[in-house]
Length: 151
Image (cartoon, rainbow, N blue to C red):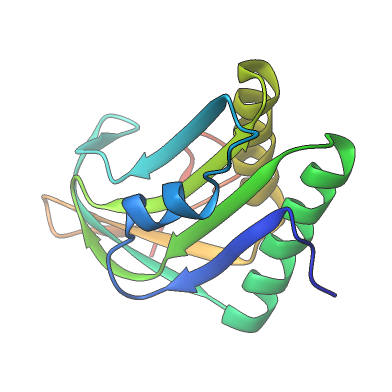
């Protein structure tokens, strides 16, 4: 079932087009737009990182991401949402997830983006394996900050 407030949800392999996501949630009724970008950082848990491999069970990941977006919109009338998560090999500085949320007011737009990223980390089947400068790699638990398991 399509929700008119959920403008776009996708798991993608190409770089995320942030401008397109912002355009998807643009509306004359929106006085505030919140944009969250998750990027690959150069250090995690004290270890120098060169990149991350993101893997997903794409149909389930998109379905769960869409469910999170719908739930968020259902709980706050007037939200418009667009979300993309990238999979594949990303380098330091690359955008891995983008969430655009608009609303008539700033607090619901900001709260909506926070709710979506927090729920995504808990519920969406996307896994990440960090690559370290020393050549080691480790799968990282997305639900806990700074926790990694060596591969």
